Length: 296
Image 1: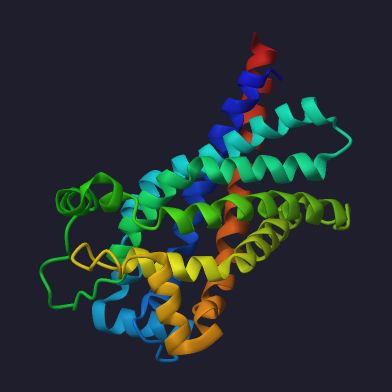
Image 2: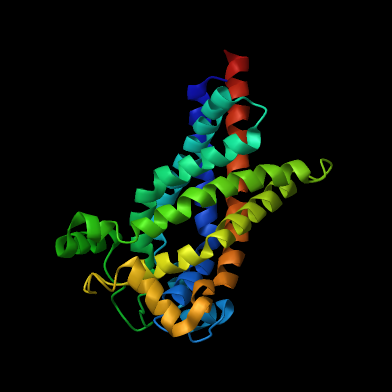
């Protein structure tokens, strides 16, 4: 298979993985974001947040902010798997194929860093929508993602309006994707080869997500707090340094563990679904390629 064909396969399978993942994990992501973004933590657990959100705002509120991630996360996931796949192959050519763990880790880091600016914009819109309280009786569901971005750009300019939280986003995405791909491949290698392939894929994907996101959870808490603040907030309040200082003063080190349970539950579900979708996409691509070759 040529490099161009491999990249196209990675892109297509990543798109399928992204679509499956966002549908599977958005309610847990809403719970995680709301817990992390609370000005003062009130001890709410994952399932209480989900239940209260559904009771006060309706079940559809659990999917609040999903439209923009759904339309864009498919592309972002495709970019991650595409960049990681190409980077891994190029690194293997440069460093040798006898070091797959190193090339997989470095390829993941490159992929995570490459998507950080786009992830920042998507997550900013998603977070702003998720933390909005909209009673069942309200006729308005808030601004659309595009209108929200335009309002922020008008108030703050493109840099601060669209890239609020870029620093924490890059700090989260770069190492986490390196660990993500490394743990996935190692987990699949260590599992019993007699186990069904689909179970191996789902378990390894879930474990990869838990390891990668668990490692950088403190950064994710800071990122959620920064991105939940409205455009009207003072620049100092929106700074990473201010958020960390305020969190430590009010809650101590426990601030960095906000929403950890929701994050781990979401991580396993979403990343099992992601890799399951990716493997499905690869299988479909290979099957169609084989049919095309046979009929040529």
